[in-house]
Amino acid sequence: MHLADSLLLLVAGLLALSHGQLHSEHRDQGHGHHPHREAPGTGEGSPSLKISAGNTVFALHFYHLMVSQTPWSNIFFSPLSISAAYAMLSLGAGSHSRTQILEGLGFNLTEVSEPDIHQGFQNLLHTLHLPEDGLEIQMGNALFLSPEVPLCPRFLNDSESFYESKLLRTNFKDPAGTAQLINNHVKEETRGKIVDLVRGLSPDTTMVLVNYIYFKALWEKPFSPSMTIPQDFYVDEVTTVKVPMMMQGPQHHWYLHDRHLPCTVLRMDYKGNATALFILPNRGKMDEVEEVLTPEMLSRWRNLLQNRYFYKKIKLYIPKFTISGSYELDQILPKLGIRDLFSQGADLSGITEQLNLQVSKSFHKAILEVDEVGTQASAATGSFVTFLSRDNQQALWFNRPFLVVVFSTNTQSILFLGKVVNPTKP
Image (spheres, rainbow, N blue to C red):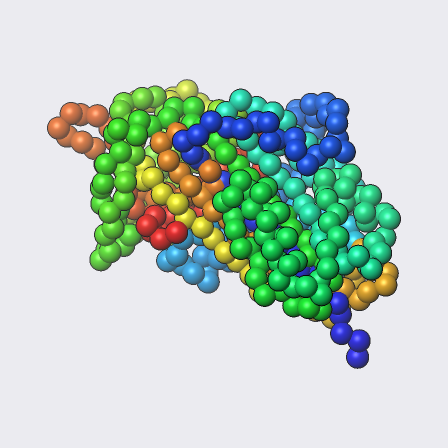
């Protein structure tokens, strides 16, 4: 029996809030094949909005699966990074494998067509890459390929046109050198934050697909570093850890105490077209809140938090922390319906007709850093509401496990999703 050649799929995500200035001059590097981009439409009929519902469905399916496997661990990932990588891969898949991929990514193919999906990602990428003061988003794909492997012209053209993919030839007979090349590329594209994504490449690997996303944003209302002090964070009933707790004096913020669910939801805006929801379950109610974490619930919270009634003064206490998530997608995605890719039944003949490709390994790594100035990577912080009787100021303490969802507001897509159980565990 002919063994399938090995395709390694790597997905990297970084969401960061950080001290330094944003370096917008990096934004257009590596995208020379789009020298004169015009602002894409982001209104009601824009292509990216046609895929936002599917992207949200996939994000929450992935999250709930991770919760079921590791209920008391930090969770952090970029659903958009994973979706874009596999949607691009579907361009080279045969009909059954292609349907499996797209349905596994949350798309209802009776409601959104395959051309709409790829045009949606094309529009989404163009929109994310538009320069904005205070916000830097870089997302892209790179295909590492043996020199002797010919690609199908249509796949090469479509992956570049829709997903801004770069093609990089490399000698897989030198696994260590190829791993270094891949890791250096990812390290550069994520500003040095994600390193050693791949190790121990198999010599029979002929192709590696890498997707990365880098997000760096500044809070609209930053915290003062001089007010950050050590405080207790209650991981569970028996575990307490010390964290540097950022504090912000009474300011107006968007937040609500949900009347129907045991949680408080805080909206924190970044400069530019990005915002975050911090979802804080009441004590012992994380499971109850997670059970109703649906696209409809996220939409409900976001709609409510545009009502001026929920724009009120509050003191905020949020940990300064870094967490990360690493996931073996070849073990996870089959449970979400994407099975053929990782078996000898894979049909990737649209990538190259000369090899019988299958995805041997697929990794996703995401890092979140949250500090006083902004976010570098994606974070989730859980907390509860309390009142400080000594000064009658209402205060919101993120001093126990919480969820965080980071949105691109003009594309209505979830960039990062996570749960912070223990902010001292990177």
